[in-house]
Structures are given as C-alpha cells and as structure tokens.
Length: 243
Image (cartoon, rainbow, N blue to C red):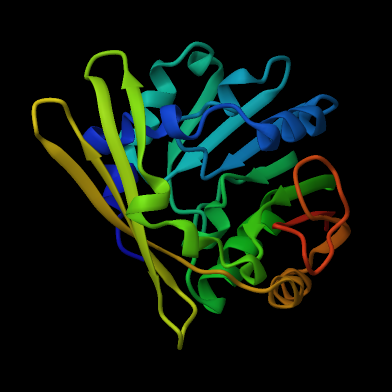
C-alpha cells in the first residue's frame, strides 16, 4: 500500500480536521470507551478522538507522520502514546478493552490479504472481554458517484490561509471495485495542493467472512452511527464485536 499524500503531506494534512471534525462516529465510540481502562485507536489520524479520552490508557497508531505531528500537539495529546505504525503489522505487546478503527480507515486496505492482516491486528490487541468497532461504506450506495467537482465544490475557512476552495473527483474501476479519488485545495494566492487516494468498498458479506477468519465475532452490525441496525440499504457497515 503506497503512502497517501492526503495524510502524509503536511500541506494537505492541515485540512483534515476542517473537513473531518467531531461527528457521530466519535460520539458513539466515546460512549463505548466510557467504561474502558484502555483504548487502542488504529488509524488515529490527527488524534481528535484519542486525545479527547480521559481516565483511561490510550494508544494511537497511524502510519502518517504529518497526522501524528498534529495529534501530538493538540490539547490532550500529551495523555496519549502516539505510535507511527501500519495497522496490518503493528504489534504493541499488550491488549486493550476497546480497539477502534474509524473514519472509514478500513477502506484504505484494498485487498483481502490486507484486510485480513488488519483484522488479525485487532484480534492480537483485544483483551479477553474487549470489544472492537470499525466502519466501511456500503458499496450498494455507490457514494463515490457524488464525488464530482460540481457536487463536491466547497469553501473552507482556514485560520492561517483564509478562504480555501476545495473539491474532489472520483472514478471506480469496474473490475476491482476500487475507487480512485482526487482531493484538491486551491489557496487564495493561487497555489494548489492535491492528492490521489484509493479505497475499496467490500461488501458486508465479505467483511463478515474476514472477521470470522480472524477469530473475531460480531455481536451487532450497525447501519449508521445513530445506532440503527444494519440492513442491505444502510449507508454504513459497522461491526461491533469481540474475540
């Protein structure tokens, strides 16, 4: 899996929180973490969730140094142990009450082998009574079809850069189902930052099979972050489970 400039380049990483701030997924996971003494945030990104947790031992893992730099400098970042690592291979030598992988980070793992490796990482770090949760967009929604320059054009207010124009474009490979999408930021002075990212859209059935193969069990499938049970027409695929 190649490095993604959207997360690895500081010029792009600085927009992450403006585009992906606090939302229902973090609210839901924070409730799950409320009774935990230890939490592992895989694919922690800029650490918005991990740094918000208090009263428990928190570790945040991400492969992108630019994201971890933001995480370490944010309020509450000093309470978290930040680890630069790959969710497929990282081994911390300990187990946690809760393992989370949010922000659709599961979708950056493009093939069955990589997804299996991530699920094995989750299993390796779960305490006997621990729980895991992650999310993936339902491919039936084909959400990438709305990721066009016309539909996605937006204005972002950046504290240092002022008003920034942003947009996306996307294309789906009909053979693999992998979506390649571009992210573009145009600054007031004319400079432009951009990246190309690739994500997969595995089905609920494929995710369920991979979870079982990793020695994990799903207690409940959610279809969105409001807590609605999963159905074929749900926008999200969110398993909550354990060993």
